[in-house]
Image 1 (cartoon, helix red, strand yellow):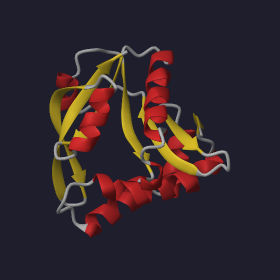
Image 2: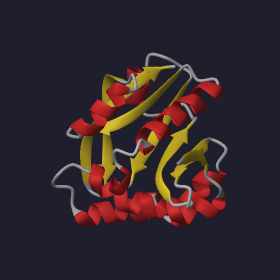
Image 3: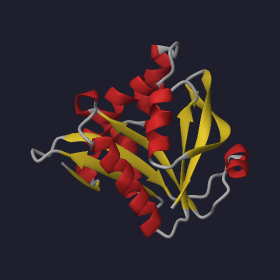
Length: 175
């Protein structure tokens, strides 16, 4: 498997991965209609085409030798505008790891670790001194994965999915 920067031609395959993996990261009780709305308004093919074309965003994909996309990461190089996030971050400049998802069939394959390592390398190569992300406070598995890669909880923020507001931790790692 290989991690590389996504091309416009990858938008459809990345959106498929996003649609199948985003619901898995939502806390129990998240309404299906809210999840579907989020997927259609944030994780559609059109949105991934825009993300891939946007100079402030980088989409990384992990793919098999057969060119199947098994996971992706969406990186954002803009300074956060949310005051809770800005207050929590202690090291600038920083890059957000906005999304990092791997198909369940690829769990345990090393894909998530490759995507995380590539994301942190990309942030470092872009001149960032740190990287940050938000993770649902109930998603203990993801928190452990991020801690394994050096992330520490530095604050909290909210994350809206449809009409529901969820509580997230802000986690940061110095590069």
